[in-house]
Image 1 (cartoon, one colour):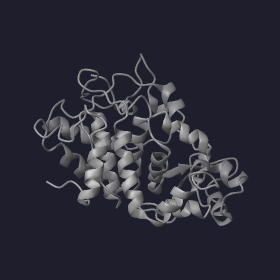
Image 2 (cartoon, one colour; image 1 turned 180 degrees about the horizontal axis):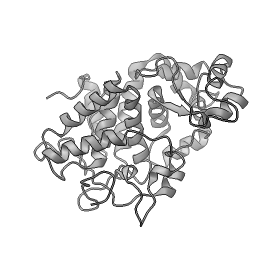
Image 3 (cartoon, rainbow, N blue to C red; image 1 turned 90 degrees about the horizontal axis):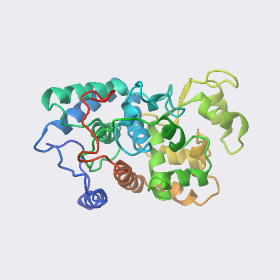
Length: 317
């Protein structure tokens, strides 16, 4: 059964080769134990995105914020307990992360057909891929077999997720700390093609920075007052906010990056060339983004007996 639109053989070969970077994960992990797992996730994601286009970006972001905090282990989904404070209230996540209800629904469906077989961490990884495809973006081979963590780390969430105020050097270091290259960083930043940002995260840019298109700054100010409206949101790609294309990079070349960290990818620095390439070559961006998503999905997975398969993604068994 096909779960997403086809790629050329050469691209699939590239992505499969990249997928071998995590030997403990396999692409056919659920083929025998829960053969309908991928179809179930894909169907639910397509339905959620059809109801609300923004949900595609939200599910993609959940996977990113999960993987950057102690690896792709589903920890971002946990609620507070008496023994730990969850990651949901960390500065990068609070009043920002969403889509938990979609993951809950997918998990409930999978528990009915394959009890305690499919991990929440794997659901996040597959849902991220299916969200991108649903919005018109590329597909990639998702490695499977992650276990779920039994704890969360508020401190790691506050410290390890790249902030929207970072300069290029700190951005590169943040990704390097997770085993991701500068090329991966620029490609993965393309997820902002379909993202939205809170006023609090771009207020300083539109009121104080000079390397920004004046018409964009004026437009954003209408929804982001200088002193209030922290939670007001605006799309990071104002051209095609719900289509996974390469307009994000076209915008950066024209000084229309909404976040400070976005515009760092085209600001007279070492990464200008790659950003320019992506702005004119969507196929190159899609290939690099897909390969980078495979690498990110392989960050420190829990496998074997190192974790558990949660029955409820919000709490430890």
